[in-house]
Image (cartoon, rainbow, N blue to C red; front, top):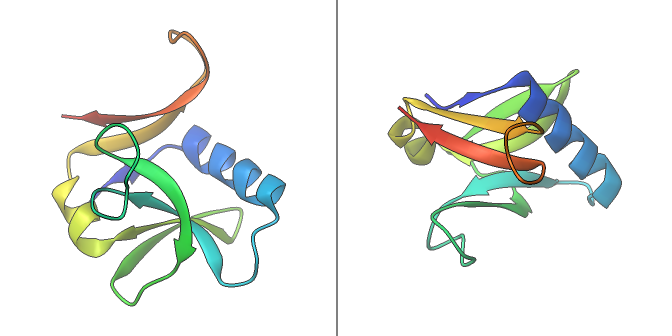
Length: 95
């Protein structure tokens, strides 16, 4: 299953809090067709689905990922990097 680092969880919590998400709305790691932006994946605001895996930080769910996507990313790590990159960003490293 997908691994999400502590730094990514903390940043997802910060982003969710800053966006003041409506009740029932969460951040989702999405791939096409849900993700329609540039690249192969992105983070969108969505509702939790029955087949989602939830990732929590400090007792609050900060990210959901569809089970089939999480399983497909079994050897991947979602991270939030602040050093070694031109600007702070989420990265998805697949091993």
